[in-house]
Image (cartoon, chains in turn red, brown):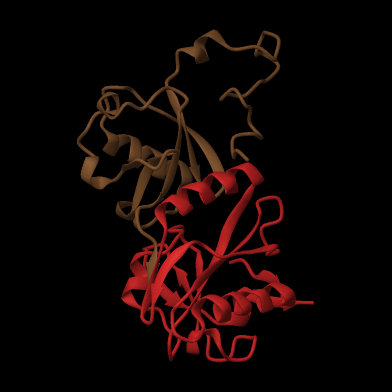
Length: 148
Length: 114
C-alpha cells in the first residue's frame, strides 16, 4: 500500500481546473502524476483533453496517445485519477469500467458538487483497484497526505 | 524509463562470463524480434513472431507489466493512434504491419467517467 503525498498547491490547482472547466455544470477529470524515481510525491496535475456533460466525460484518444509518449519521455506515471460528480461522490459502474490505469492498487478520487466546494476532501470518495479487478472504497487518509 | 535498465539495455545480464566488449550491437539480439511497449511511463521489450496473433502479443504485453486484473480492457496502439484491441486479436502481427523494434502503447481504448 502506498500513501501518496500531494502538495496543497496541487490540490488547489485540481479544484481550479474543475471550476474553470466544469463550471459547476459538467464533470471534469485531472490525473496526478509523479516521477518513477519518486512515485510517492505527486508533482503535477494534468488536465486531459476531454468531452464532458452534466453526467460524465470521455478523454480524447489522440490526447491519451500523446500523453502516454510524454510519460515515457519524462519517466513519470499516473498515480491517481480525480474527477467530479454533480452531487454525491461515489464510484459509478462507468468509473469502474473505464479508468485510465488498470493496475491493481491504482486510485480513483471522486469529488462531489462538480468540485465547487472548499478545497479538500469533504464528501470525497476514494476507490482502489483490487487484485481481482474489483474497486473498493479505501479511507482517504490511508492513501493520501496533503503536504505544505 | 525501462524496468529492465537495471539488468541491461541489451536484454540479458552482463556477468563476468559474458565474454565480449560492451557498447556494440549483439549479433544474436539483432535476430530477436521485439517491440517496445509503453504503459504508464514504463517501457518493456516484448518478444514476438510475425506469425503470432495480435491477441498473443497483447497478452504478452500485459503480462510484462503484471498485476493488470482486467486485461480485456487494454489495447495496443501504434504511436500514430491505430488501435489493436480485442476485436483484432485473431489478426497476425504480420497482417497488422507491426515492425521489429516498433514502439507500441498499452493503454485503455476508452477512458471515461460518469
